[in-house]
Length: 483
Image (cartoon, rainbow, N blue to C red; front, top):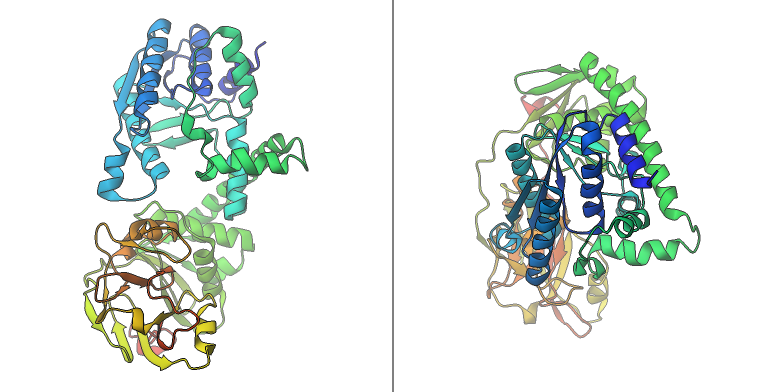
């Protein structure tokens, strides 16, 4: 039996779809999705499936995209499968909203796929991610840093918006799919952007994996086995955590609460998962919860002192501990907006809205020591050549279209993209201050990036040193808190 057919049989037995299901297959035009559409069509009678094909043009490669669209449409027509398509203007979306190209394309593509599923009356959307994609995903997460649950990689099924996203090819490699296309004469199209190593996934596929395969020729299947094992263990721990949430956590008008002693009695792995689950339940923004934030809450919740403690979190949330009771809640909507104000050359500037204070000082660097110290990386300290600055300096919030000549990069980069790279929650981006000079050049985003403009270099004599720090909290550790 063909390997692809075997995988579809396995997917049916594992409940990825039911007999008589309506399924929309996402078809890019590449060999993976074209093979999946052909194989589903060949098996449609056996499982009484009602298939649809959905194709999205992202607007990046005009000539190639037109050929792909016509090719997929003609193939679906040849198979007698209803065809749904959309022109997704990702460049226009990025121009108006900013962000990462791949993330924007994915968001628009999935929105269209859900619309196609609704039009077709489908209960599932079939995606052609395969074993090579799974291996790349796991390695990408390892490189970037991930929790153990991240090692599970791409899930074979996931509910989203009332529709099941199913991936029946995660155990089959790219080479098997290419063989299938050759054997059955399935047409396919090559996306030239897949050969550009400037995209992270492409670089992992084209450079990192081939290099690592010198040490383990079976690296891809090894990473896929790791994903399968991690997925099973994550599923078990998720169920345990859900059970603990039902028994230990109570809902309140403001959020959720539980006894500190109950959290302390759990294994550290379950403590972290339970905290993360609570945060994910309460958060209005879908951005992932970071390990550091979970660990800050966990350690603060278990610490002996102070007895009363509070911390504002990302995604508009707040955690507090009061005499052994732990509470998570949504913060009141931010009312104060960051206002532009002139910055001194010597002195302090307090930004209550941002929760930050700036300290400015000028100095004469006669022996070069201050310039040498300026070369040391510190995200909360920046040193500038005062003679290269246009005065007066100002601190202001981000504006649409802001760009900065970031140190270490050629050209400029959007401030919006820097916030995304640094995983700054959208609710906080309007409150983060930008230090600018009199010509409007963005010099520094505290904690994130500094500009190459007016950099202190050997030979710079008059320097401006700027430091940022959180405004000291008041009352978190005692009765003065008043809460």
